[in-house]
Length: 317
Image (cartoon, rainbow, N blue to C red; front, side, top):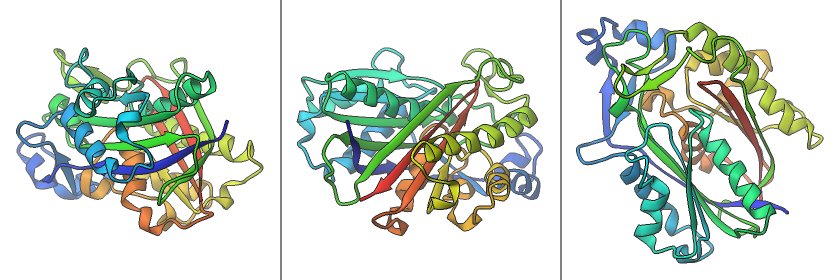
């Protein structure tokens, strides 16, 4: 069954935290942070905002772009590792807000790979004939969990959300055919079990093994792109744009160099909003939709703590 992304929308909180803020918090200055991460500012959820409210904001922006009535949605999949509520999830918040009575609702967490995993879950439901119109929303409230005083990763995190609509119909002003989806767990490699963690009562988000993350992210984000392109008779050179997980500007630059891909066609927003977690690749694509033309091939590629990786190949129609 062919699947199509019918619409894409994102939400980023208005507030920005500059690098200068961290000088007195974790001892790192603007030059040090920017040279090692590419980050100048990061987005921060405002008072009263959380993972669920940001998800709802993204869906509110998606609603007017849908080729079907939002009430007819029969599957809502949320993706996050920084939930507001682990019981009443963002998926349930969307169902309640839009009275999608027939919708199945679930949430998936696979660190920064979660958005791609959520898309793959939709693929499975459609293949089984159990859904026909889906909304996927990825939302992270990293600043709720981050430890700003940590000099290893306290300065990395931003907040935001992405929402997409998926159906078997090639409709939508900026629709894209999903040519392939690839995911893989990588818990057996490197320092996967200790490199990145989120322990709400024991230090929040931490990344004590940044070098191990860097090396493996570069390798497996490229591998994911190779899998989805080669399975469709394409090469990486056929891609018009790559929308990678926004973990680190140097990771993106390294990937571009290793595959000989123009860096200006690597979609990036990390300089302004920081690492927004699993929505980051989708947000970067959403922000650059005006650059994408009919016929363009776009690759999304991610790497998540734990570890895991994933990629999606899109053809805009």
